[in-house]
Amino acid sequence: MAQTRIPLILDLHIPYCIQPENFLSRYYLIGSNAEKNRYLTCLGREILSYEGDLDEYEIRAVRLGGGSASVMSPDLLGKVLSLVREKLPLVPGAEVSYDALPNTIGTPSLTGIASGHPNRVELMARSDNDSELHTLNCSFRAQDIRNAIRFFRKFHLNNVGITVNYGIPGQTMQSWHNTLHACEIMQPGHITVEPLDVGGYEEAKEKGIWFSGGIESGEFPDKAARQEMYEHAAGYLTEKGYLCYGAGLFCLPGYEYRYRVLERNGASVIGMGVGAVSRFEGYYIRNLNNNTLYMKNAGDFEKLTAQIRERDTADMAQEYIYGRLGLSEGFAEAAYEELFGETAPKSLRGKLDVLIQKGWARADGGIVTLTKAGQFHYGEITGY
Image 1: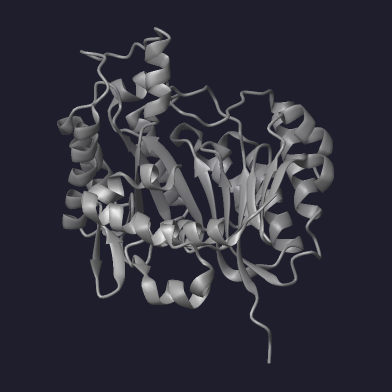
Image 2 (image 1 turned 180 degrees about the vertical axis):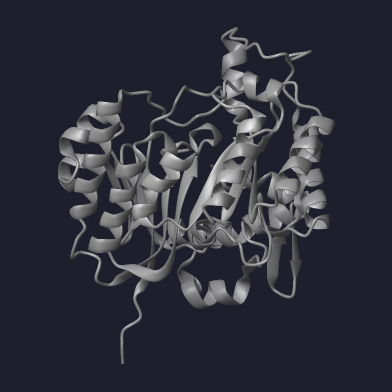
């Protein structure tokens, strides 16, 4: 009998962008074309370093992430994905997705990356309001989002997701509704609804940094307003035929973002690239966060690793609870007991009671699921 292999997801981190956007906590670099091309070569070395070491695993999803993978050479991105297909245990039909900025999508970019056979793209649209996009210092405008969708259809790439943000300074409920409406009209298979990085805004405000962009008041929507925005999105998208299958995740039937589903179901993760994080073989592993050192040491695990620590039972139990809560099926006590038995800390169960008392979760028949309020607070619940 063939042995069942362990599900694995591959997160290839691309840190480069056209220009840094406001209120994002991600690590961004600009870089010359030569530097970006060298980075992809180094990423290839890291991929090759795992060749032959993953026989017990099967890669079910690959993500070229970071928010702006499409700013790289499309031909080299295609080669990176081809290398994954040739050297690592990617299962037939695996999801292969990449993050893209709207103004980088066109015939050359889609032709170049096609050699790696991506079958999904996540369009980092942020907003359909030009004033809000200017506030965020995005390099694109709303029309670029529509143009990108047209190109995807021309190239028969139908599995398209759109990521939009709520809580943008100056954003109103009406402008947020207009963004959701614009997304729904474009009919992507998936819509991801994310809060803006509140911490990034508050830090900028404390330092006296203000951003232009046609904001009438310059005010950041408060927590109550942001929660109302999330709950409005959940109601509106559901009404338009989108299934809410997890906190912030909405899709038409059959278009779930499998990377996110596997991630929240606790699949092992190998992160590659500068600052990438892995959750693999009982360990947390973080790559160097210095790009120069990363490119120097890519492919050498010991020199590349900045931090490694063992995941104990409490870590894995908490990951399981929070991951399952992030999906609409919720957390099932029976499955938890089967996985962890008496080894899991009892205090974790107490945390669920707190969520229920707050109205962020509900319990029914041994299954705990998040309410809309709980979905809004999901990042606060998990600490991410």
